[in-house]
Image (cartoon, rainbow, N blue to C red; front, side):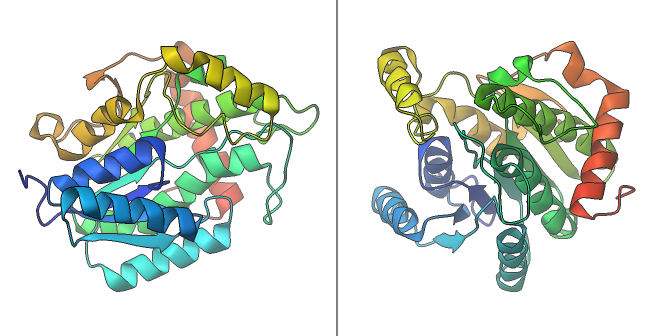
Amino acid sequence: MEKMKGKVCIVTGGNSGIGKETALALAGMGATVVMAVRNRERGEKALAEIVAKTGSKNVFLMICDMSSFESIRFFAREFRAKYKRLDVLVNNAGAFVYKRQTTADGYERTFAVNYLGPVLLTHELLPLLKSSAPSRIINISSGIYRAGKLDFGNLQGEGKYRSMRKYANAKLMLMMYTYELARRLEGSGVTANVVVPGFVRTDLGKNSGSRLYSLSYKIMSPFQISAKKSAETPVHLASSAEVAGVTGKCFAKCREKATFQLSNDLKNQKLLWEATAELLGFDPTR
C-alpha cells in the first residue's frame, strides 16, 4: 500500500516511541520521511530498523535539537534547501525533565522542548507548508494537559519547580496554540490538529532523570498502551482522506475528542499566541 507516495513528511523525535512508530508507518505507506532527531547514534539505529522493516529508500535522518533555537532554525534551512515541498509535519518530540534545567537560549527546558521548539519549527516551515497545500500539521499533546494552567506573567514557570505541572502547562499551551493556528490558517489549505495519545509505553518517563519516575513507569508498564497502537492516531491524521480539510480539532484513538474548557478559551488562545510571538520573534499577524 503506497497511499502516501510522493508525500514528504517530517517526524520530530522519530528515533523512539510514538515518533518512531509514526515514521515507520508513513514510510511503509510510501512517503518520504525525514526523521528529525537530537541524537545521531540513536537516530541511525532507528533509521536502519525502519529501512529494514519497510524496504523504503526514502527515509532520512536530520539532526534537530528541539531545545535549541539555533538547531531548529538550521534544520529548517537545511530542509528547505533539500526539499521543495512538505506535506506533513508531525511535532512529536517531547521531554519530561525532573529537575529544572535551562536551555542555551535561557528558557526552562520543559517549556522549550514541549512548546517553544515545536512552535518555532512550525513557523520556520509554514511558507513551505502553504506552498505545498493541502498539507497537515499534527501536534502531539498529552492527556495531562488537563492539569495545566496559564500565567501570562510567568509562562515558563519561574519559582518553585514542579516537573509534572510544568509538563502539563507546556502540553496545554501546545493544544491552545494548535487551535489558534488552525483559525489563522483557514483558507490556506494547511490544517492543524492536536493528538492526545493516551498513557503510552515510551522512554519519556524513563529518561526524566529521576529514579522514582523511572521506577513508576516500569510498575505502570502493564497498564500502558504500546507506542505502535498510540501512533495510529497521528498516522490517521497524516494519511487519511477522512480528515482532509478537518482542522482545529483534538483527536484520540483516531476520533475527534472534546477538550477541557480552558483549552478552548478564545481570548487566552489569542493572548498566548501574542506572548509566544514576542518570545520567538515572529510576526503575530502571521
